[in-house]
Length: 477
Image 1 (cartoon, rainbow, N blue to C red):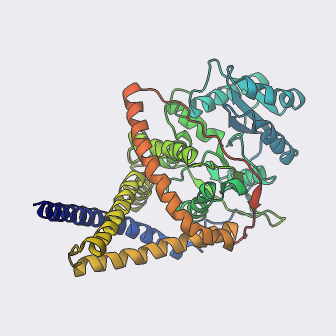
Image 2: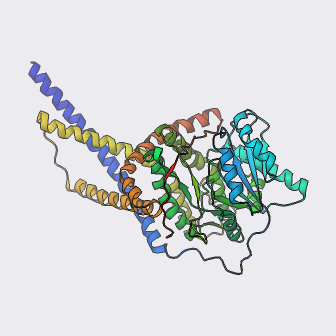
Image 3: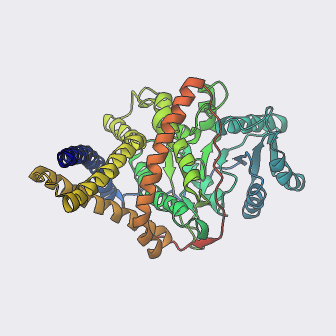
């Protein structure tokens, strides 16, 4: 009768919830275990090498002489670009630099915002594209590279290096001097990128601070010490003109890949693949301030998902097509075998984000179904299947790995932003996971659209630029 149908429906629901939950949790647990072991091995390597920093620059090293070009691609940046250029010109008043600003003819607001500065200061060079925007950031940078070459031929000079920055960056006065010191014997130098933690974006924008604190406090620092390819962050990065010229030769005169969403990342990886030296430098000025590039990051879920989906599509998906495993380049045949495997390990870490997002999605889905099963036990009298000893062991080990992961995140956030932000890094880790899941889903769709249409457009993300709440940082490296 009716009672029998209810019992049958309840039994079917119990079977579905328990079995689906078990399979999702099993998949997620194995994935978390593998990714957690990967992170643990990296952390242990960092712990053993954290005091074995790159050799300091010798007192006999002669800093790189000559004029430096600063490339600033811009699309729809009228709100922030003028203030950014004014800050740069003021900070680097004594430096021999020229700022190349790339705009588009159909971006009238941005053109009007910078025109008064360009008219007053000869260190500013406005470069207007031949066609309407947006194109891609790589295409914009290639136009700036072409303008640099035009100036060299017209003036009979040769620039020494190129510095990459974005339209909303806050630069340090000693940044150019640091580049000159280390570019004397390196092809690329990357300094830390420090997201601004603001009152309007403590949770969404704040999770960028947690991630960059760990990535630039540990990941890039260890890669630099190991001597493997160092990805460029696209800001706070300087490259010798010779290194860019080498990439331009390979790409028909254009050093930046115009059909890439992450052209900066690819430039850094290719420099390492050619055997050129790159270094990550976390230095302190004579006044006790860290020499870093500060910038605002998205303060809403939608904008954060858009930005991170571009990173995932560019690095983990399209980047695989563009770069492969980087062992077939000039340096591939002569590089030590262990160096090649280290480089491949780093590439795997860069490209694992879609898999990590899938594992997280399975974990959250499994937790929801497990909660439903517990509710069914209390309300409907369901009998839960006993957990095996193997699953208990797996859950316990994963819990330890999770605690270790959160502890590392808090440690690096505390070093950059202080104890208060370090405590907030724990709940922000959940926000970061949700954004990562949404971004991975959008990245797959974005990559598929790129493959079908063959078109890559600049998905510029508007950054939130509010009042800085916390700039408390330590100078400990």
